[in-house]
Image (tube, rainbow, N blue to C red; front, side):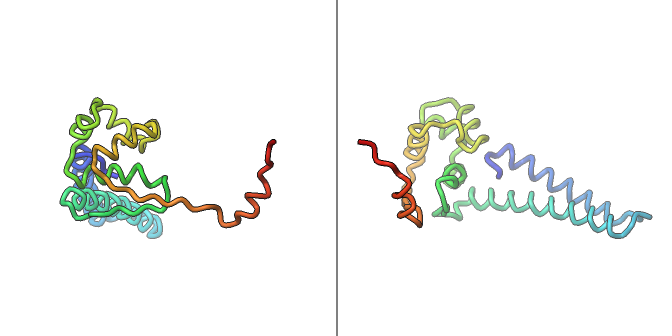
Length: 154
């Protein structure tokens, strides 16, 4: 995922290089086995498509095309926070200022998908972004097994 303008610029440059490399690859004549040529071409096209998808997502986020980010678990929260920041048009520096921390700390949080951020800090980030997050907590499907395995201490 592209997290900032610098990464976006780098990705766009990589896309340009991949397109040229793919074009050059298609023009060259080779005595290599056709299956190997196809595998190389497929790999290059796959990498190019992945880079283009990342750039398109970043462009849509920056353009404000999203209003809601859906996640299926709490594990999706970090990317949701990053996407929300981008969609709101905030730089990492601007978010850091809102939270009252250094830009480098936001960069570290985002680079590691908020792995080192405390719960309190994540709440600060959510508040600084002005997000409304709905939470649902689902009990395990087999609650009888869960209850039976818990020993009551008296």
